[in-house]
Image (cartoon, rainbow, N blue to C red; front, side, top):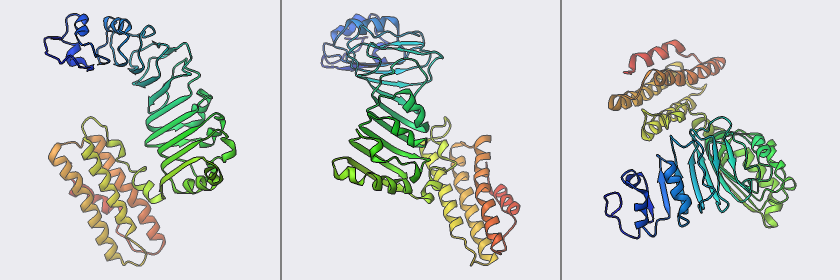
Amino acid sequence: MVGGQLLPPYTSRIDDSILQTVSDLSELDRLPRLMRLATRHGTLELMEYVARHPFLHELSWQSSTVSEPDFSQSNLARLNVDLTGVTCLKLNPVLHSLALRGAPSPGLRMVDGHEGQFLALECEQGVPPFSGLDRVADLSLVGVRELDLAAVAQRFPGLRQLRIWGKPGMLAHLPAIAQLKQLQTFTADNLFGYGAGDVPSASQLPQLATLSMNSLPDDAAKAIKANFRQAAAQGLELRISKPRKPEWLAENLLNPFRDWDGRANISATQAKKAAQAYKQLLAGTRAIDAAMDAASVAEVLSAMIDAYVGVFNQLDRRARIIETVEREEIGTALAGLLEPLVRQLGERGVALPDEAVLLQRFDALREF
């Protein structure tokens, strides 16, 4: 029995469902195969317990009471830390994987005897501000929306492995990757904001052994294949997939509803339906050309607006997710497509309904 619960002796991982029920942490000693802990309510007692038990190899830690967690005496191999409220984090010598999440306190210090040289460091969105770990050689960034690669290269000049996953995201200063002379592996997924002219040459990355880029600008993909063709023939592992044309970027990266995913009042499914409604709206604008007469254009535009508003009426009818901010975003997205369309077709001599009339139709139809 542990915390009043019957657990099998081969239990290797426990979380707060057990930790919050034990009266004395020594009860955990009844689990001889326990190797992994996960808590959102870390305490000094638990930190000390981890230090005393060398068979504990993995810890996920969050605490509202411990501002300077010290794991320097532990035998942890993997550590995942929420940095909220943390001012100093002390690491143990054999740690090889450190994942950081949450917003750090100002002046956060990382203490590691090797300055991060033997760590695989993973951060959410970007590199949080902290001092220490200057010799990190293995860095993974996940959920990135915006990233300045020049800042990353300056912060960790000794990088050998760099992996970046966008949400999707915008990558600035791609040429700065050439500053990483020891770089052996570069992986980028779902990142944009650069073009063919930003792609470095193979000679600028002399140690590169693996270059893997997925979901990237089409012109950059072509330039990478050209610039690294000879290096690939000589052994470079080159993987370039899913090049994205400008139309895809407009529908996805520039989709005004991509930020709905993750909002407290909106589910992932609802955000996906909103983004799809915008894609359909874009597709409708592309179906209009100068060869159409005014009546046909008006008919297509009316159908577009009806379908667009219908999606959001249905979403709000079911769950009441549309509040003031969302209402403005829905209208702004529509106006943002109508204004240039009306202007462009007007310049070609196509008679169009007044933009204000079209937006009035939107207001008349919406139920939110």
